[in-house]
Length: 130
Image 1 (cartoon, rainbow, N blue to C red):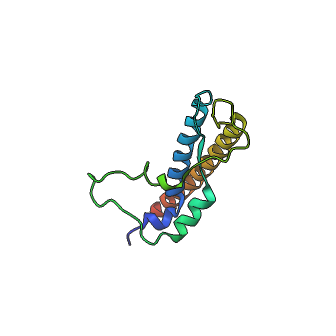
Image 2: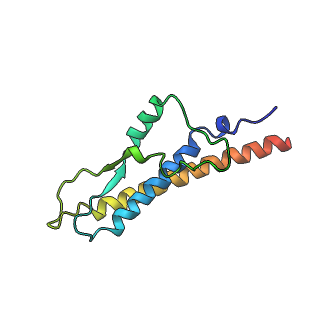
Image 3: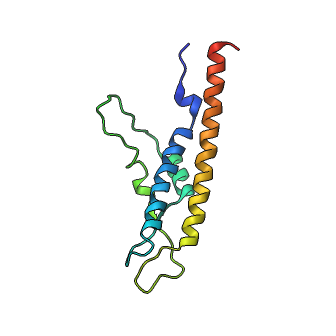
């Protein structure tokens, strides 16, 4: 009986891609904290979850030469961060918020990796018959 890895891993594969993309955005925000006119961007996790629920079809690559969608997958979910107070130069990066969001995102990424590791370990055990 073949194993369906999509069912075995569930949403965790896409969650890792989301956390990876969010890490990239948060890193860009931190790197541009002193750039005049830079607008901080982020991904709203709840909005992505809602979009995923509403999405009827999922694009799959059927050939190894197809373009990877990992970077573009959450492009429509990237938003400018709500500004409480911008700097005189127009920069909207709040370093405390960025660092807190980065730490939260890192914890979610690690949790998802731990869940996937345990699922893989369980599959390995099932295959060996232990």
